[in-house]
Image 1 (cartoon, rainbow, N blue to C red):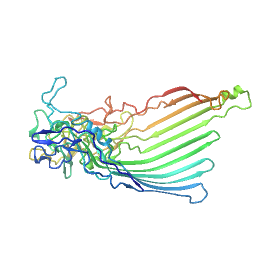
Image 2: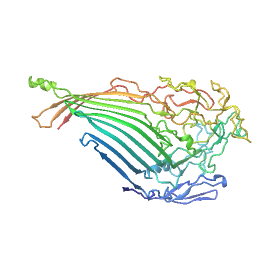
Image 3: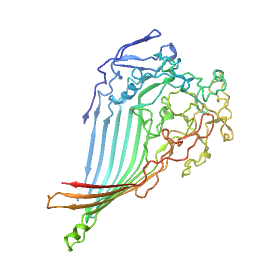
Length: 530
């Protein structure tokens, strides 16, 4: 049993207070929004408050962590071992979970927004840094206990002389862990029967030439604070599960050879893989629909289903019985190799690129809108044109869904994706304000395979000392020069991304053109060991 608690994070200094529109934010160590409920009740509702700690409740006071491990030799011959274990581990809410959001929000970083601004126009008079319009932050101040439960069971058996076989199961479950994003202050959707999640569209509020795919017409959850600059959140509603089969065959060093081969078949699912910031990984959705768990659930951003790794080291025998020179030249050689083969990383097929077809009003770099996939169509055919773009369309809804109006903003946004080169499947219509029918991290990119190789030559010189050794090293990384392509992702450059259509329906480049590993690299070295 282990007990592990921590105090609530505090700051040694205080942030000056201020008053805006009659609303006072007290001077304190932290200033944060702690509630997003009933934000429309007044012009200053859901504003930041001054607090001594980002957490008003300490979730660690009952952090008792039981641990249990058992080992059994069923045949009592020292060759077989059965092991099981369970452990509970707490994820303490330490300052690292709040530091980035603190540094990127007021008063440490003052960010305002003016959607009508143009690059190179000089000082923007519309950005006046009103305290209610600059970027703020929201923290779940009353979190539940964040913890992880790990368990495993395995059987290890000595096979012959010098061989060990291990087969096991490893599982994990985490609850109430931190989940971060680049913005939570979004227009919220409604669940429409037979359609799914629909975001409000009021065509009467549109500027001339605009559609609901490039102009927000709904109201953000906190219309009083953050403005277009956003509100950066930390929630404690994250959850994850992991299950895997793991196997390993190991040969201990004998007759100059040792090696090992390991394989893991695993599956990881979570609600968020971003504990600190929204874009933790290349494939992370920086601004997810954080208040809708159904839109967040999916494979972990780091979910690699198959992992194979093999190593081999061989001390080559020397020619003995000849001259000392011949023995020195042929002795001390060592060959080594590492073979790695992984399945691909997951990614999300989206629509909108850096725009906002759903009309959420988010502050971020990339759309969180999902693309739709045609039923029965294989969306991945491999190769450089990895995605089968014929299988994807902009988001659709049944043709029976009425057009959105001021009286019924949860209808289909008019003039949705007008430049789409494909037509909506029979019985459906394109609706830019409808979330597509795919989900987070539904698809997997190309795998990764590398072979590394090394040649060592050890020349011992006992006349200097017993341990003096001159080692020549020749190391070849990716010796086969195999090209491993990067999966489509949000932060990829050079036109390779995971958005298939822009906000107006134009197609975007998705062909693979970036690698995840380098070309063949050769490294030579001389090492003195003494």
